[in-house]
Length: 236
Image (cartoon, rainbow, N blue to C red):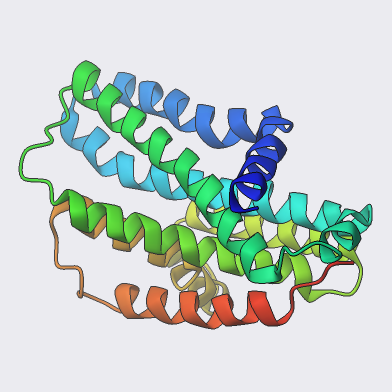
């Protein structure tokens, strides 16, 4: 049953090639663009890598996993799932395993390319810490996205909310925060994407993981939305 659900989630991902191109292809394109602008400056590329990985995790969770779940609600597919032994926690856990395996493969490929072609040093990296923080960041995004995919009564409304939250986070992270109005600046500096980017960057660059609120906030958001995604899981 578990393997069957993992296969289902992977097939859903493969049936949406736009997600693969956007989520997995765009960071590689950006890598080569930044490398060209940096004139081979490995330090700039080194700072870019964790951000690219975090954005890919965000895409996999919001634009693939959660949107496909909302669509499955809309077409009544999950009603059939409800009549099987598959419980909501099995659906969520297998969804995490399937997308996380894709993210880890992508991450390994991106790091390898950066090392071989752009001389990004891998010496002294704490791979256990980096991997742990990547899994934590992914889990936070996944639970937030799954909660949104189930939070509203109409599946179409949940899809629209997913788009709004996703593009708002992407938009705000690209703005110079010191020029934003007070409330917008607060939101921009405290979005889950900012917490995730700072946390994974700290692990990747060997900085203090506990500097600032990023680690504890990410843990709390993961726990809270993990509970909410199970509580509000909808089969229809």
